Length: 138
Image (cartoon, rainbow, N blue to C red):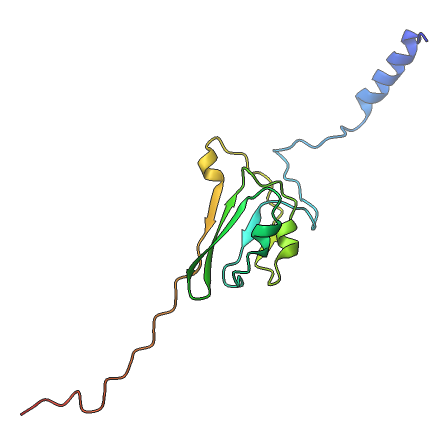
């Protein structure tokens, strides 16, 4: 089926006066939708160490380490992550969330290993001195 050259000229002229269908990214920032699954964020104060996220991650991209009493560090291997957010859905305490951050390209693969450390443990309460220990002999 052969088309007439005039028909193509009409289409080219129509396209030359239309507004572009794309945006001039990265010069214009785009806003991602609310349910977008981007970079993961770990909130160590909420983590209970159940490791449901580790078990459910299909890419084996999450590692949870206990660093103290009820304190956990988390390591994301963003070079392995497929951004499915299954770990977010699995977490019973909402310690993980998918952000809308999507500009994650790196030249150095080591920068894609993200470690979130638990906050430092609160200082231990001071133990009171036994009665009579402050008295000096004399």
